Each structure stands twice: as C-alpha cells, then as structure tokens.
Amino acid sequence: MDSQLKKGLLEGCVLAAIRDEESYGYKIIGQLSSYIEISESTLYPILKRLEASKLVSTRNRLYGGRLRKYYKITEKGKVRLREFCHDMDQMMEIYRFLRR
Image: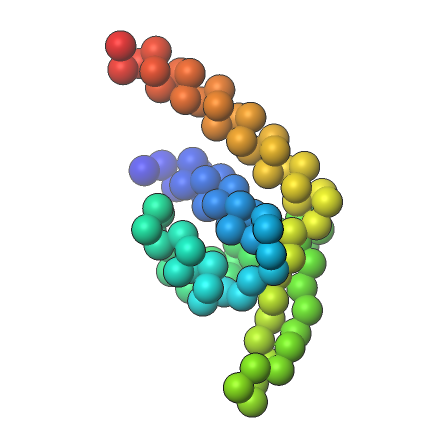
C-alpha cells in the first residue's frame, strides 16, 4: 500500500478508535490490529502529529505505578474524522467504478 495513503488511513483509524472514549497506545493498537497493521513505532508518531495539530488532547494518569498517557479526540478531531469519512465514501465510489 502506498505509504502516504496508509498514513492518512492510520490517522483516520486512530481518531475513530478514540471517538467514543479516551484511550492509550497499547489499547489503540489492540483495537486497530484486526483491521490494519500498526506497531508502536508507527502509532506514537501519529499520536504526536495529531496532538500537535490539536486533533487530540492528552493527560497522564498513574496506572500500575507508572504514568500512562491517555488520548482524547477534540472537537477539531471530530470534524477531521467526519471529513475523513466523507473522503473515504468518495474513494469507495471510485473503487466501485474501478472494479466494475
């Protein structure tokens, strides 16, 4: 798969994974792993970009004696996720055209 296309897909998938509740890296990987291949070394730069773009907010919480970083989608992130879904609908139309 084209790396730029996969990057966009992964960002949309990460936003979707935290759309309903905040989450942390390992849990996000678990949620996505049955749909798309993603590793920690791929996920954390994506989360960092989403945070820098104000699409997610973060907070640290003590868990099992360590700090765990939790990610929550922002209103701006929800808008971006809706845009992503709209773009995907358009891509599916193109895909259907190509496959006929």
